[in-house]
Length: 440
Ligand code: 5CA
Image 1: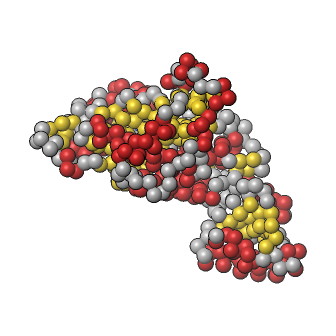
Image 2: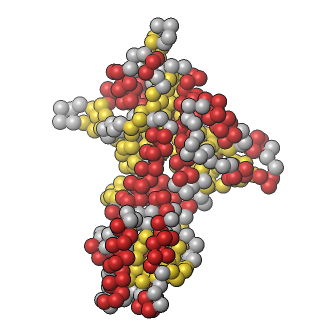
């Protein structure tokens, strides 16, 4: 992509309404725009990051055996009356009437709809276990939408729903998602800690929030320091290994870790003082086991091996990809701007032409731009006529992991300057060595 043709509305002024760094940086870097309180348009740079996050979430859901579908955003109120949540959900639910005066709502979550889909098709335990997920926009009329994408009213959610014959099966389904979440957040460059949590309006008695530590987080969290160093399961983890998966989950849940809702000061006090972490955190994922809370009233039953029909045991598993865009920035930035982990960077490489209009420099830049594109690398070529200083500032602000700086001085010596955004290190490399480095 040529920057001269891209849509990147960088803002020079720091917007006053933005209280936390991720919100400020996203507005300054032209990633998103507020359209109403808690409702944002994703601009091209922001959308690129969101899509990359979604894709990693999707790959790890698929690896764990979950199957993608897509449910609508608008739901019928009658469905929610069946579970009893239509009145219980309160003011957070956006209620709408269609032209026939039928009561509808903009989905804040999809337990009811997925249960309706399940009961329409599945009759036998032989079709279980089943885990269906989608990545879809949600609406919750939060009292205090704030911090940009962190707590929006319209936000993107990956929500998965598992169905099992009994509690033991449901436990395994829960563990699969637990491990998939550890892997997902690690691939996004984040250290996540699963913490015992309140299940709130979703319900159920087993629930973990996945928290990343950040001083601007909305939750107060307490945990054992060892959680920061446990290795995350590799890509070869066997999701069908019931015992192996349970032992991984045990390892990740045996020490103390709780959000403020579930905090037990006495139990926390048992941890030696140098191992106590009391911090703030961002909830990036939340998983629930709630048994037959929806399947019973909504009559989602299957017949077991004994021919007897029983309501299925269910769990639900949420991740917030739009919140993650902000959370990753909170975890990875400096005074100059964002430092994207490579896995989610909107572009992997930026080429900075230091002397636009100088024919030797233009030719070198154009040639290198074509080479990188030919190798399938996401590259943003700054071919604008801005000053060098402003090009450096833009590349740092928008956080591209690799900056290749091309100017007459380096070209005379046959080199490009390659800067790594993560640590600011710079090297002068030949074009061939630069390609090698970037395709490693
Ligand atoms: N049905 C369950 C699981 S699928 C559910 O709705 N869980 S939740 O309420 O905890 O939300 C799941 C995830 O969505 C959260 O962990 C968070 O990452 C994201 N999320 C929730 N509310 C917001 C919001 N207002 N803005 C941005 N992301 C949100």
